Structures are given as C-alpha cells and as structure tokens.
Length: 168
Image (cartoon, rainbow, N blue to C red; front, side, top):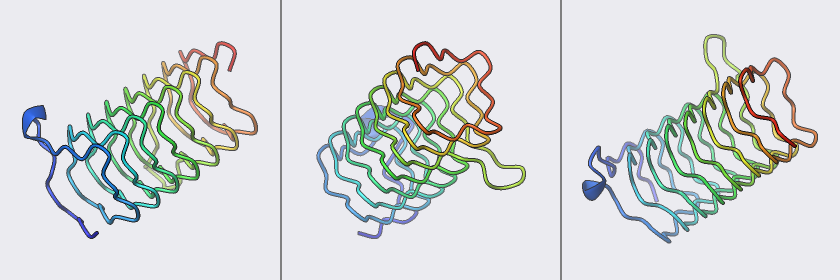
C-alpha cells in the first residue's frame, strides 16, 4: 500500500487511526503522520517510514523487522516487545521511547550525516536485545539499558552520560 504523506494521526488520541493487528507489510508510509495512532500487534515488516511522524504511536508487540525509518520521529512512542531486527533508524529521534523487551538485533541506529544524529535520550531499553546493533554516534543520555543485550553492539562515539547500564 502506498500511504506516503497520509495524515492518519492526530494530536487527539480519540481522533487518531486505530490499525491494531493491521497487515502493513512493505507499506510505503514515508512522510506520513501517524501521531498517537494505535498500531500494536501489527505487521509492518519491511515497511518504509522515513521522515514519518510517529510520536506517541503505539506499536507494542508489532513485527517491524527490516523497516526503513530514517529521519523518523518516534518521540514517546511505544515499541515495547516489538521485533525491530535489521531495521534502519539512522538519524531518527526516539526520545522517551519505550523499547522494553524489544528486539533490535542487527538494527542500525547510527548517526551518519554531518549535523544529524540519532537520539535515544530518556528511552527505556530495559531487557532489549541490541546484539550486533550499530549505535555509532548515538545520543542516549539518561537512557535505561538495564539487562539489555549489547553483545557485539557498536558504540563508537556514542554519548551515554547518565545512562543506566546495570547488567547490560
């Protein structure tokens, strides 16, 4: 489905889209507004969400393997228990994002462009699987990494000040 630049989110939760359990595999959602949308337990495998506004959206338990989400806004989004393996979050903002128990194996959260950066400030990555993830240059201040799996994760030039790395 091509939903580029669609406006199906809203500042008011009652007016936002409800796509719970939806099959959005390979959907083109670049530049779309899904603010406060309910998309939990959905299938977004290999969907494209570049430059999308996904603030406050609920993706809890969704299959989001291999998504392209460069320059996307996931501020205060719920990605807990989601499978984000192999996904591309380069230069995206995930401030206050709930990623508890999420799978981010082989995901790319790096900062690649001059003047750009991936932000995970105050995010909850408790018990998340970040094995083999690329976190080069990420800004993750005061982020919760308790019990996270960081095996072979690349953290070169990452800013982790004030973050809780207990048993990570």
